Image (cartoon, rainbow, N blue to C red; front, side, top):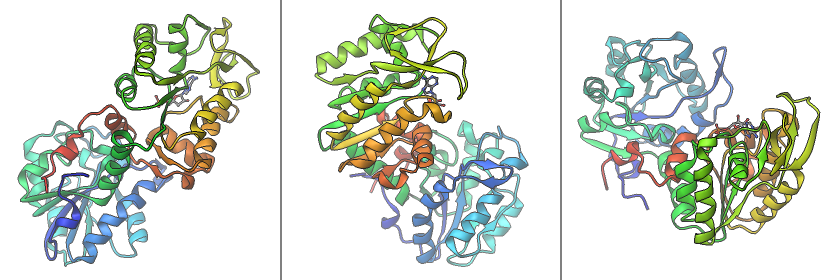
Length: 397
Ligand code: AMP
């Protein structure tokens, strides 16, 4: 279990508690289109409110790059959060984040009140983890709680720097839950343990493939990254995504799987088209013999069956990255086949955030999974076996 101090270990009555949340939610014209991250933050906030803390929330949103960009204001989050909590959330609309307005809002707080600060990335110091802004953040509160799993792989002022200038720090419930699920799955899995990797690039997943080959019984690779493995096997892949400079690495990983006794499953057939559109005429070909002028957009029906069969026998499954260009409905079948297989089994099923989380939710299988991570990048780094700086910086129990 996590050796870090948790919200459960804190005495917060009457104290000011700064909570780093991950409210980096997708917005379309000011409207929140996916509130999962807000919902996931509620347990920690509700606990602190119930115990009579003065709860000061902070988060980043998008990449304003040190400028006050109105389209990346956290104002819509304050409104939605207030609805979800069923109580007022005061939005400190302060472009300095910790300027006069924010300080006044905090000074006016009673026990159990909630204030939300403006987007921490309005300050250019934030992403550089510069001391001055860390101190400003810390000056607002006695205790810091990090519940922003989705940003825990970044050493920023509001995730790492601030911990040095508060008297106490802890992780929140969401952070604990994420680490418990991902940590247990990777380090203490019920077997067979199957990992599924997809998405566009091998180069993004190099360390993950390498680390998972030490842990899993079966590693399934699909999506755009599979074509680099096809070339490593001596295949030709037409116009499919290919990273020539990663072919040797793919060869090494194929050899490593053999040496470790890991069942490495690669696509045997592929749905190919000419061009790049949902309506293009498609055909199904062997993944190792994709004709010139054609590119692979999804795994084929035989591969769907092989992958689904491997998933059906598992007791622990982790999935990161779609099997094809799932944004086009005609090429979402491979991704859906994996989602269905995971939804149907009696096993611990974990979705590692990002595109696969979006795909599972869009396709309607979200509530069938044991855990959907709120952090794509953070869960990938966790699967790489890296320590997350935002967790490491929190005080031990
Ligand atoms: P990533 O950001 O690396 O997780 O990759 C996700 C993206 O990979 C999605 O936008 C998919 O459309 C894309 N993708 C998956 N399979 C393929 C493929 N066969 N060709 C091109 N893009 C793909």
